[in-house]
Each structure stands twice: as structure tokens, then as C-alpha cells.
Image (cartoon, one colour):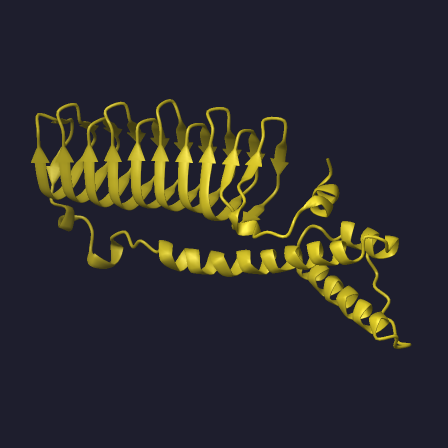
Length: 270
């Protein structure tokens, strides 16, 4: 079923409350922006900006950057991640730089990590340079760990240098030097978590897209018998600044026609 036919069958309801499901038979290429929760069960090649929660199934693979409120990973991500909460479950993998507020890892993460709270569970593995306010390590870290507070649990193992201000060891192991965190980083160089600012900016972007999509849907519902308008709208389903201008011209033209005025605006859609 085409996207156009799907729109025609939509009932009046809040799009933000729907869950967008990318099934295993669908491959997405290109940037995707959404305000709805997103469940991925397929391959996505492109960046995702989601002002909500993103869930990747065991079969899901995203080759691109993801920015979202929450990201739950059972599959794979190859790209940068920026989120409030990142959860990487057993056999899942994230490969890329990670800017998080809180992070739970029971799978594998590879890349630079910055956040407020990092928890590596007993089956979790991080091949990373980690910088955080607090780190709880019950699994394995291969790389440098710089943290204000470190809790190294029974199975916790860090293969690399550790820079820490306060450490609590519970029979964990560090294979490297242990030095003071404040000795290597000045206040200005320490990780600054800016998730809230990024969400505010992202929300504005999403609002623009949602407003545009709502205009398209409304015009389709009101003009299902006008073939010329419909064909114009079909060509404009993807948002762009240029399409937004064309859409506004179509809206204005329809209003002129409704008022039975002679002036009619010709809209080029090619």
C-alpha cells in the first residue's frame, strides 16, 4: 500500500500518539524525522531524529546517526547516538560516539562515550574511552575510563588506565594505572551534557515537519475529487523548504477558488 493511499485512509487522530513500525519487509534510506515512538524491525540507512522512544529489534540494523529521547537496542547501530537514556541489551551492539545522560550496557558498545551515569552489566562490554560523572562496572571495559565516581563490582574488569576521584572496589580488577580524575581534565574540558538543549532544537524541527504533514493530510481529505491537486500533493509528500512554499501556494489558490475570485495562483510542481 502506497503512502498516499495510507494517508487517504487515516482517521482523524493525533499522529503523535501512533507507533511507527518499520517492519522486516521495509528498507528505509535517507533521513527520517518523527514525533511518534519508532519500532524498527528492519534495516535503516540514514539518520533518525525522533522526539520520542526508538526501539531496535534483534533483526534491526541502523547505519546512521540517531537522536532520540530514549533508545532501546536489541539489534545494531552503526553511527553516533545522542539520547537521554541508552539501553543496549544482550547480543546487541552500538558502534559510534555516544552522548548520553544514562546508559545501561549488557551487550557491546564501541566508541567514545560521554554521560552522567554509565552502567556496564556483567555481560556488557565497552571498547571505549569513557567519561562520566558516575560509572558502575560489573562487566568489561577495554579502554580509558575517566569518572568522578567509580563502583567496580565483583566481575568488573577495566583493561586500561582509570582516572577517578572516588572509587569503591568490590573485588573488581583494573589492569592499568589509577590516577586522579581532576589531574587530567580542567573544568572546561570535562564532559558537558547538553541533551535538553538538543531536544528543544529537535522538537522545533519535528514541529515543522508535523505541521507540514498535517496540512498535506487535510488537503487530501478535502480534495479527493480534484485530480490536479492530488497529483501535486503526491509529488510534495516529502518535506522541504521548497515544497512548503508550494504547499502554501496551493492552499492560497484553493481559498481563492472557494471565494469565487478570478485570480488563481498557478503552482508548478515539477
